[in-house]
Length: 138
Image (cartoon, rainbow, N blue to C red; front, side, top):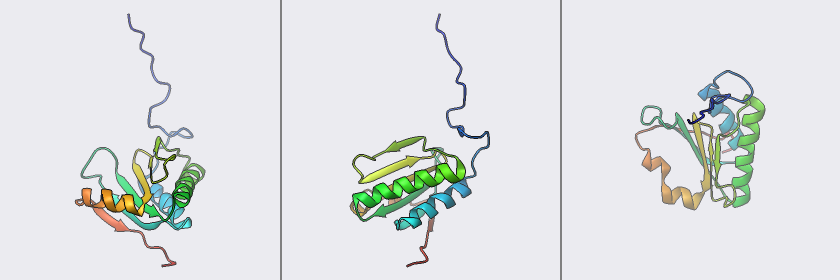
């Protein structure tokens, strides 16, 4: 007979509390982290009406692989410090040309300008509600 073990915690549950994080608060923390490291052309795509995968995509680009890594680190650190959330899944940290941080409700895409232009996430999700995040320095 197969022994099926129950999970001690839900797969997507916050490790530090039983509260479900607010997507809007998460978006604010993520965009502030990206702005603090000079992320370029930060765009928020509300895909909640289009897919069950996630509620939002946050897309931005950096000018070098070092900046892309710094942007990803800033998002991870601020999310853990301010909301208590860790990325459920991380991809691309080795190559540093397209880093994906999956916070379940929000997926962050940090990429090089060349990758962003080539893959065109904003074009792919052109039915999404789009918000461009303005940097006060610009």
